[in-house]
Image (cartoon, rainbow, N blue to C red; front, side, top):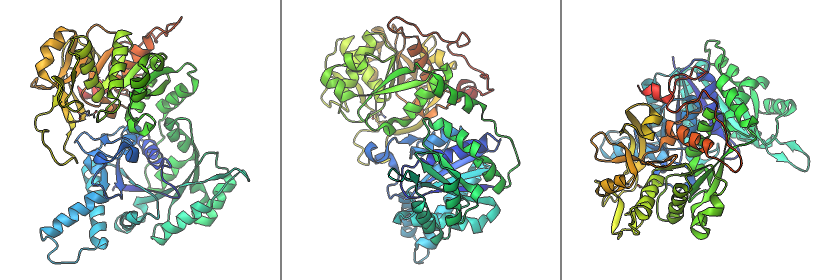
Length: 564
Ligand code: GLN
């Protein structure tokens, strides 16, 4: 029998509801239960693929190529699952589906209504995930905040699930904000009371409340919430803002959330194993000399646009026992004032993905700086394209080399538009998306890092390396170390004579896990750890060797051996 946990949000958005839900998923997974996740997004866009990073942060790409909410990234990382298009449903998708059926006459002349047609469609998606994943527990997070007009059909749908599958198989958690009033120095519960009232008016009586706050939530505050919201006192939890998201599962576990949820759902009483999570929390606390990595992009003031990149860097840090501190550097600023001052402190330079020409010259300057100063460089998607342009301009001597995306008239388009992408009018869901195989050439850094010959990686792009320049670039020292199995596309390039300068056309960041850093991030950070700094050299633990696979001391399998 599948169990369902529903997570709703109250008072304000951006509460970290996704992190709280992902942490609950981790607590259950650590007890040996299988968990899958569904994020319901009540907005009318079909997917976030066409939304501005300012609106939505990162677009997370699943293995099957759907462009989804960034919370799916938290879920994959915290629970260590691979999700698919079944795990993110928007109102745009539901309405497109229903209107399509109406136009083709499937409803036989009936009136189409929110209840039952829209709610049934939403429940259909929940059921489909339960059936296809076969998971013990399905976590369903409703995006937005209780009270949003577009959220109502979603709340009604999750309300109905309780009568469909039974009280014992469902658990409703409401995550709200407890604001702190500076004048009286107290956390206020009234907004939570109102939010729960609104939820109850929709027929959902929460089983537990998690109060988010910038301070510790004391017992008297919890008692008050319990009394006013009619929730058992032991089911009211506080979650203060912690300095690392990886501490949230431990914090909530200590509060008893895992036990409460498993008991309510009548799951076997298994002990959770969170040893690795304790270990990484210690790394985050103890390293007084963090490793500085510069991330050079155009949306750096908005860290959420590069969320998976930042997390993958931290995972690589965990692997090497180092805390990674990211210096967010605006590529436009490099364009204006040059790279020397801005990149002087960086042990490694990462250029992430992006679209459009703004700031790209600054990224190219960062790549030149990394190559000339032998600073480890990792380029992801656009960051790989930038690396190729830089090499063509400054090593091959083609000063006008560029990507056709950035200069349609470049005489040397070393990055050109992919076959089939030319002249596409629709922008939604039309890029090269999802997982594709990549063959790794022997005796390259990429091959050494992965330790296997064939890997699958996730893509999201329209442009690609231009094979017309391949022989010349390779002869000049830019090696095509990863290619599509039929050799038609270059997927990884690396500078032969450099401590670590590698770019991938795909996005390895989506596959990285805290327990299992992605091999390319792991080796990039290893090289950064080894970058000599003024007067000192950081020494790696002797046990760590390049390309290492198998289990680590926590018995966790490595990404590489999992693919074998
Ligand atoms: N804009 C580039 C392309 O479409 C890179 C995309 C990306 O970085 N995700 O190919």
